[in-house]
Length: 155
Image (tube, rainbow, N blue to C red; front, top):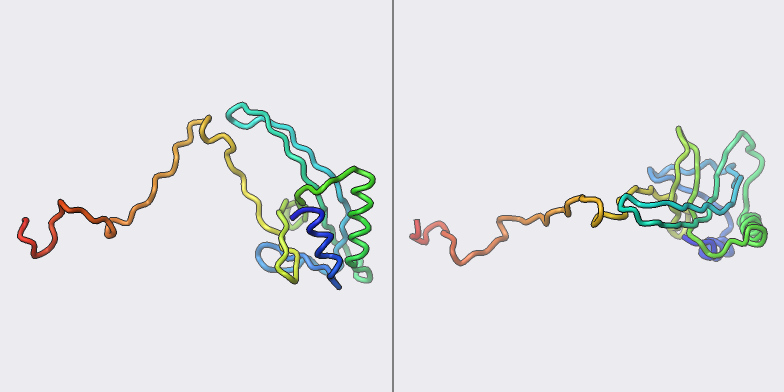
């Protein structure tokens, strides 16, 4: 999800709820404590230089049960960060601390913002020697004109 997409959703929302990958909700008294740009400049295992830019939202909760972040307030925070940091329409990555700090992708299911798990991957499979996965074949589906079938008399 990009900054523009979240702003469009927030414009028509009455509340904000974030759902963790296993289905539970981030407590309703969460705060967005940071909106920032994260730049990553790196080389992959094949030696190719790569660059990524994302927008980071950090969710935080404390024992402040009297305050709730409303959609219009989050829109204001996003717009201020766009103006101050020069953010464009990058993808959003969400940080949230459970037992450790997790980084999540972000989707919306029509009701809640869904924190999606992120996976690592090799970006240079062709250059680092990882063999390609073999296609799985169901042997019972193979048809051959040179095969014996029960009752055919070929055996």
